[in-house]
Image (cartoon, rainbow, N blue to C red; front, side, top):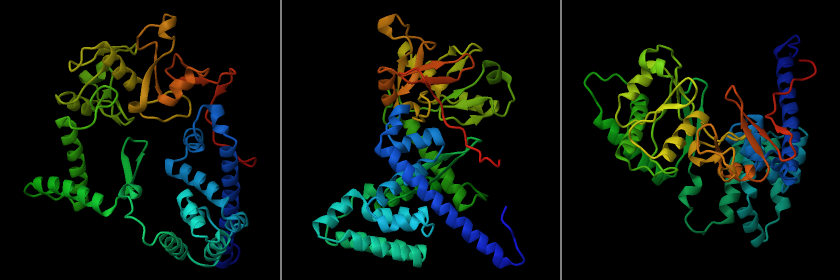
Length: 390
């Protein structure tokens, strides 16, 4: 708790002090992350990068994990800015903006042009400490543009991004950025659906109509079969639900969808009536009772069952989606292991390789998966640490 003192000035001083303390702690964290990256520490837990370890073991968002890694790399080239960050004078967000000036490509361009990186560091640090956030962004943009004023047209794919955030209730938020041409394509596709669906008395807002149009666009792609094939079959909507719930259940979270969202039994029944939606029904023992009629090959049935049971890579700390994964034999086939759901685990390509080189995964009776290193120690995700005073 911060002390309010006798006036609002005291509170504002406390806020400024708390922010400076946070900046110093962010600087320390950034240095630790960089040290861990340089020592290849994530390899011990079977992760290929520091960013993936931060996502899986510290529960950071992909964006925040990537920012921490980028900041650590950037500060090695900007020692003055690093010192200001250590002193609490510069925020992690400001460092992230400055990091755009020292990407590998821009460092090479600066060296080719004989630019003094020390001078760049000094200027950026001065603006970060004494100017506002917008001023720093402008200076960085000016510097980046000056490195290649007459260069080729920028690759539009470099500026495209889309981040999906799944919430606890299964709803999805997203944010992104498109270049001018990519944005035009998206608007044209969405507007076609918006204008084609304008029933009389429609009271939806513009934002609601665009949201419905995006879902309809996805429905159209899935229904027409024009989407790329993933792991041997076309992408589809899938729901895991107990047979009793499917028949007459009323539970609001009876069904679990392929990407982790939960839906009501009534909603699952509604989906089951749609002939374009594949279904898999599991019995009380976890074995598939009804694998639908769109496929007859056991290997495809087994993969679909494993996808719906596991929901993605089961290796501790990994969040790779199902379409990145292989179906792994827990007891190797060459050693007599059966090709069955009980003897299967969904693993991404990297962790499938790791398991064949000494790591081990095992499914517990309660359905949870556990992972062990080659030395026999278990990999566990870190629980949030509490301060001594907590």
